[in-house]
Image (cartoon, rainbow, N blue to C red):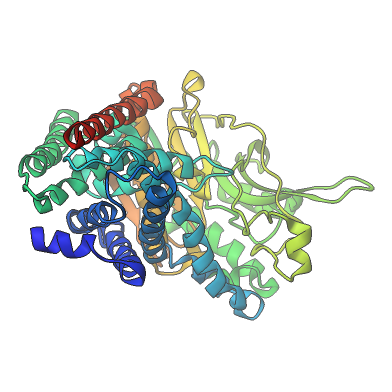
Amino acid sequence: MNALAARIMLLWGWRRALVAFLAGAVSALALPPVDFPLVLFLTFPVLVWLLDGAIEANDRRRVRMIRPAFAIGWWFGFGYFLAGLYWIGFAFMVDAAEFGWMMPFAVAALPAGLALFFGLGTALARMMWSDTPLRIFALAFGLGASEWLRGHVLSGFPWNLIGMALTVHDWPLQAASVFGIYGLTVIAVAIAAAPATLGDERPRVLPLALAIVAVAGLSGYGAYRLQQAGEAVLTGKTLRLVQPNIPQAEKWEPDNRARIFSDYLDLSSDKAGGTGRVDAVVWPESAVPFFLAREPGALSAIAEVLPFGRMLITGSNRVETSEGAEPRFFNSAYVIDDAGTIQARYDKMWLVPFGEIMPFERVLGALGIRKLVTLPGSFIAGQRPDLMDSPGLPRFRVLICYEAIFSGDIVDESDRPDWLLNITNDAWFGNSSGPRQHFQQARVRAAEEGLPLVRVANTGISGLIDPYGRVADRISLDTRGAIDVALPASLPKTLFARYGLTVLAGLLGFSLFAAILGRATTKRRQK
């Protein structure tokens, strides 16, 4: 191990960049759909050894210390995000004639931008680096802090946080109820980097042993929690989840409009099967290819399908017009009663850059770059995450598309919902890793908050996730169908729901203290 570590430390120039890139790319195997977190025990030690060799620990010239560390982190992050987010390119091929030319730029540009946060994290870590095993806590602090920033800077994009590697199985997933995904990121980095100490001049086994104990502890806690939980308690309410499996390229063709709407009605009726005792039907994001609120005939057809007392919850684009002003477009969700009347509405707050909203629209528009959703203007963000009230159902919070990826920001703990509803359209990304990663993040939100989460997608993955993050039922990707699911009751507030930021601050604070202690130890030895 010493010889391997030494060879990696001595790498320079393009060889060092290539090894960092490959280590990052291989790390993506820890994510869905491969779900092999043990690979991080191989890749993160490589990252540590690369940082060991970036500059001598006693070099006090900060620029010379930080610059190579930033580059190593950037290359590692670029590989990680390129391998983990390749599926972004699928969206540009839905209308290849219009947007296909943008695909290679988007597939490279997004990972390159996100990798800046990894570079920041390794630069922070290198400032507190030492020649002791405690340097793994410097890396845990640096990447933990930079991953939190990635989820919050500008609009934030906390997709494929490192902590997701600890959530791919039900047992360790339970730790999300205590630490949240950002806390699990700090823990995951510390655990994964521990084997690097086997390559030290004096190999240390203790850090690896402690990492194994930590993994066993997380899994043991999860196993105990699930054993105590048993089967989820039910509310007595039943939902019908409708997944029509409509290819994105066909959805907005005018000739398909009537067929698509008819398909939704057929899947929503009791003739589609199921229990028959359904309190609400749920359709996905932007379900129908028209502005539903402006189509009284469509609302009447919905009323004919809904038996007395049954509601429809659906996504639909919405437009507001006024004389002398540009139309305003919203990505919305409606609650519609059995008379075809809209009873409640939610407007999506977190809009997808370049998909629903175009940053620097005038400048980029002049260059021929347009957003993927073809409306005359950008969508407008909603203002408030009001809870939705539907007669006969517990109160719920709607999350449209990737709103479900924002840990700690989806629930107002002073006005807590009874369940979460995530409606989405992952047809943009085909049969790729993207929909599977999106579904896994929904599982984490449920476990974090102790709330059941119902997910309805156009083409998968739809399903019911209980408040422990367990999948109770699902409709697979690329499958047309409808399922009736019994809505579970929520749990009391989890530790994360109560103290989320405090727990994260504690983990970061401990990591920072350990890193500083290691740095001080190194300095004492050098005197």
